[in-house]
Image (cartoon, rainbow, N blue to C red; front, top):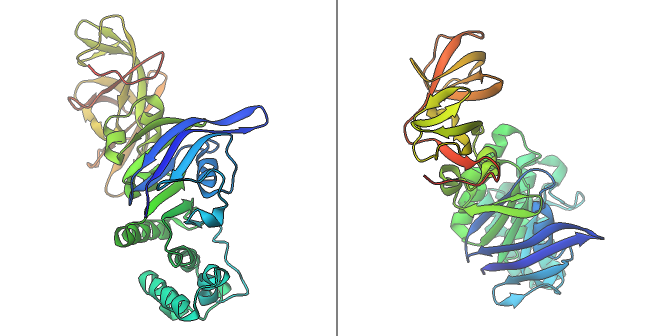
Length: 348
């Protein structure tokens, strides 16, 4: 195991820079998730750590070694890909053993490592099968087993669950997290799914346009997003963002005053309201119901306040229908405030 230190990391394709001087510290044994929208640079960053993509500037260190110029095979990392990358003509055992055989490891030691990994992943009964005879989840376990047998310093996961159905993704999330708790190997995991990031990570790195927007624990990012991008990206349903302006007794939103303290009169802000913190009330922001979505445990109410659509989440089953007029009131102390021009968080 080892820590990973990234300093002023840059990547350019010709004159176009796509990674802009990133600084990231990953502690020994930490599970770090790189998350962001498509094209934000997260997979490029992972491939640079792996040595599959050259760097244009800065340094990557694994443990006490700067690995900028080391081949992937010499970096002591193991990568799990989105498409599994299994050899279809080899059995599960042969797939898991392949890299060890190429490294010239003793046959008895290979057998020991493969059997141990198969036991951890529940693959013991499938070692003589071929990939075509396995389900998607089982193939993903084989890909993980192939990484485990190498006993690397760092695991790299590149959107490993994106090809699985929703139910299996939930199951595999738990299995990967449990695997990390057992092995305690430093892990860097790429996903565009913020639910995966929230449920799996010790620490999340939110990327946008090749820049780091915020680094922190899942609940840090959820409770104190650094800017409107992080606020809207982390959380499902996403945070409602509404323009407002400070007045003497709060903030005006669409001509109505909310009792939000700490905003200077005349200061243009963006208010962030988590859906679960917006309650149906006798008073508050008047809204018109557009859609009512019962999910079983919750009801999602999508409504319009002026020209802006907002979402409220309640565990009740309100007897409302599209077209009804309602009032929405944020719970005290739950409103997030951002500067309207910069988008940066403003602490009262």
